[in-house]
Image (cartoon, rainbow, N blue to C red; front, side, top):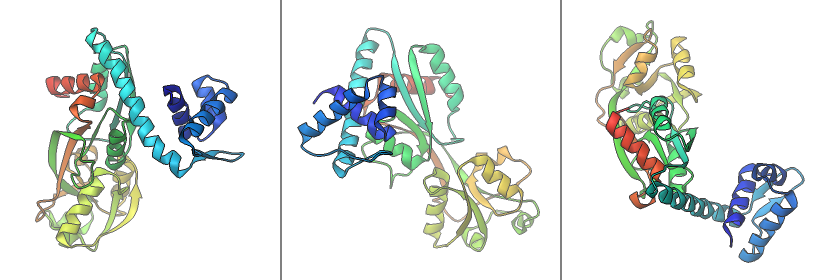
Length: 295
């Protein structure tokens, strides 16, 4: 099994198309097909289901994909480690982050990193914390800034604390909760219509855990995938939201109320990294910059 076979396999798995994968790899389609056939012969099993429109992974292909990604990530880390010893940081930094993550200013941090390491290519992926944790565990990301969820994040990952803050209720100024003007409990919110994020997002997982711990059922009628849509819906009095406290600074026209009675209602953000021996030089350099300059 050659590394190029694995590289070709991953490209086809990502693009779900031989022609597009061949164009991206800058190889002939016949050469790419021959490489995949050689890999299938060696493993003695089909890796793809081929149709005229697309290709999809077989169960064996899905099993191979995770291992192949880890192998290629380790090879990349080996090249970068040798370059780092020679005094030059190059290669790629693959980073993940949730939107509006607390405890780190991602854009400012990456700008400072680029100034210090111009030969490193930066790739940023924005998604929910659950998906990003899986990407780091699989070796597809060097690190990710996520919301802590010890019960769900892979055990093999390292967690570097960034910050923590309470969750806050946001509502329209004319909402009945605004007239209360004091901290509220989950029980007092049970009958409300909620605006919230996709279940993979950290704030949603934090809120779901808090309400489950309090034994309160809630209805998320309006589900969004970006912060500004959530704030717009609350601003139109279509529902309330339970969000990290710093979100209230993004829309000062809304009323913010503390949540009381749930010690679990704490939003904690962390940097997720592979074990120390598997952490890339670029990821180590980024974390050193974060710790030094507090971005």
